[in-house]
Image (cartoon, rainbow, N blue to C red):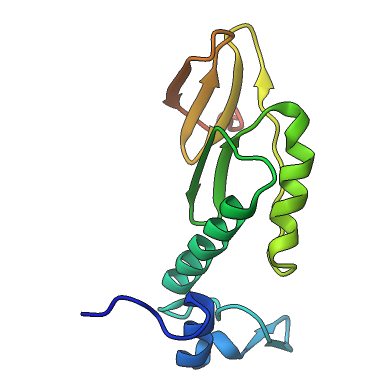
Length: 147
């Protein structure tokens, strides 16, 4: 079985194969919007197409990056990378230059006595002063109001 996709990759294949990818209409507060890029929200194929599209974009980003991250992890619309602080701006600008419809944001780690900590998909990732990475469960802060 041939696993390669025709055309220019996953995004080109999906836009030619699924009408949901090419165009959709949506209503919000009695105003009809015409979506001209991406997948229709609520479409059963949207999550799969979005994940495949992001994988393709991430592969291009990492292959052509001016600075290679120590690690890169991604899941759905969340990613985590470890870079030297002086490289963050260049890497971020590179990510945002790949596709103007998809823009990345940067969240810096919290610095504490244990090291530098950042939450990623339900985990706390802490890099200690000696470079060792420790993982723990991330619990989102919540209001302490008694009902």
